Length: 159
Image 1 (cartoon, helix red, strand yellow):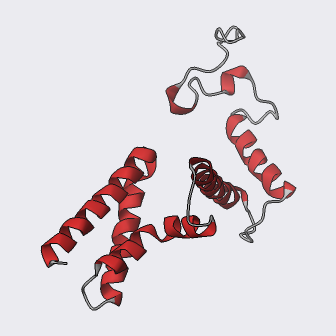
Image 2 (cartoon, rainbow, N blue to C red):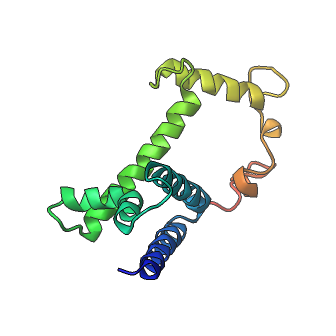
């Protein structure tokens, strides 16, 4: 294959990989581009400054190709969805453990959870009386949403 065709195919594959990932999960698109560039940089260094299409393909789609191979050469929508869901939940689990793990041993214990709850309770108990009153709660919830109750104790219209 001529060099220009190889470069065009590589560009199309890169655009497809980056574009597909950005569409599938907009929040992770910047991270996806960064990881893609890191993989390409590593492949470039490992191959004396050049990357063939086969090397490019292996760098870009190794996990997807492994999924196809692990499923007998074909991957259904359900199988791909299961794999993506598992990967997403594993990332979430790693973040939760990193947030709560007070000993840094990669495990989550009841003490880790209650320790984090104590810290949060202390932050919310502004007058340090051992109780959280409505007036001590933030007026706006996460992302600026209105709390589920108002100052009169109503549920904000939620049923």
